[in-house]
Amino acid sequence: MKKRLKLLLICLFMGSGLLVAQTQRVTGIVISEEDDQPVIGASILIKGTGIGTVTDANGRFILPNAPNSAILQVSFIGMATQEVAARPNVRVVLKPDAQQLDEVEIVVAYGVAKKSSLTGAVSSIDAATIEKRPVSSASGILEGAAPGIQVNNTYGEPGADATIRIRGFGSVNGSNNPLYVLDGVAFGGNISDINPNDIESITVLKDAASAALYGNRASNGVILITTKKGKSNRTSVRVNANQGVYNRGIAEYDRMGPDDFMETMWIGYRNSLLTKSPASYPTTESANAKASETLISDYLKTNIYNQKNNALFDSNGKLVAGAQVLDGYKDDLDWYKGLERLGHRQEYNLNGDAASEQGNYYFSVGYLDEKGYVISSDFQRFTGRANINLTPKQWLRTGLSLSGSHQTTNNTNGTSTASYVNPFMYARQIAPIYPVHLHDPETGNYVLDENGNKQYDNGEGGRNQYIGRHVIWENELDMDRTYRNTLIGQAYVDIIFLKDFTFTTKGDLNVRNSENQTYNSAIIGDGYGNHGRAKRVIYRYKNYTMQEQLTWRKKINSLHTFDA
Image (cartoon, rainbow, N blue to C red; front, top):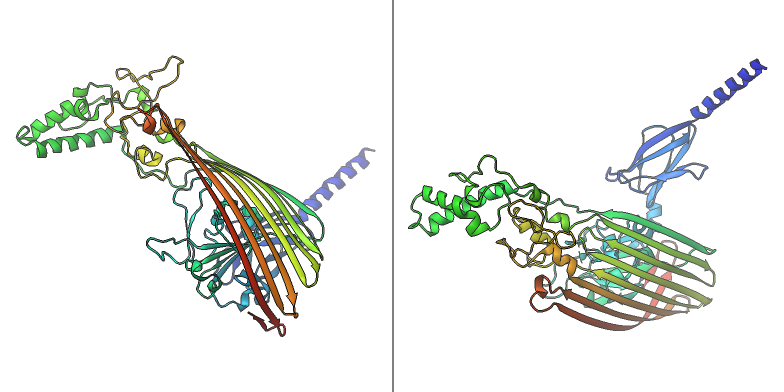
């Protein structure tokens, strides 16, 4: 019995070893033959199975448990599929697939066209590329995704649209923004009203020939946005959720600490005495003595050190030995700490679609919540969309599209040119000796209110900069909030006659309203002294568009097609 048990255990261990030996860890990189650059998002599939992965931002991939005899199928849109044997450190070079490239269709001003037949300056971004980019606005999709387009988001406030320039600056005083066209109709709203998850493709028309249909409105280029439609033969429902965090992308400049600042200010003060009052301070020694004696009392007004005002510097403007910042001040000199936070982003989308010979439909609802890395900068958006297309007769097509959005934006003064309200300018320019909160000047300890809480320092008690202003305090008390509602409806009818002619009539209704509410507290800042200040501004817009178009499309054979 014991011998049989041993034999059974040996067989089990040998079998386990054989099973382990039959799989391997496959790693590799996929690059393009054209430019020798990594291919991002290439599909890696074990042939004959549903097991696979995609390449990362560096073109690399990992398959942890691939069979030793596995064959990998490597594919990417516009490139020829390759099959390679599974092994460690695979290097796959993908070549362009001219035939596949010829079959790619791009939305253009008058309909769709094969990429190979286009002669104008046109760039296109498909749904697969869009889905990989968790952006809040369609303008963010274009950033780095299409050549010849400048996308600039200087501030990065949640919900803010980027500035897009297709042909540079064409006007000094006029608008340089491109024309947006949504599902074939000129779009006059904000691009942030559209949920990027509802976009099927974006086409950028960059030259005059491509944008000629839109006249002078297209002088700065045209961006065509096509929303999704039903595709599958059965009802399909998808849910996706994205979570992420925001942080400041570029670190703050290295700034002077309190010691360097005090010694530098001493030099500046001494030099001003020599140049502005030479009669009173004819020698360097006399100016040095005056600067050491009165720099704090006459100019800086605040002393955060453990030495008296007139005993902090030696005769050469250096801090005396043993001079140190009082402990109570050390953790209260960083103004950025009270302005910034770790931002958070969460997005949830539910969409579904179906299609048949008689028509198709697509619906979606979405929710986005962004909290910026600057406190009080937030953005919320609710969106909904329904696209319905019907073909009741072979010669008749009709459709209806409805979409709506509700946005709430909390703004800061990050774009203001006034240094006393712009949080970045204020925190950068305030001297590193002025604390955020009130302190006892003798001990450096915090001065607490009756509830035991720290109190902000408005500068009136001893500060020679931004007196009566406090960017952190104002950011907490003041409000700048915008509510925005949008409703967009489109309907179209296509009538096909004489086989090659299509008459299209299309109508669009765009209703938008926004309400901006601002409040300045009576405690500090712009509202101080007049019992506070409040303002409410309401905007309402309503746009109608009617469009008729007659198209002739003649296909002679598989090689020749005429459009007019």
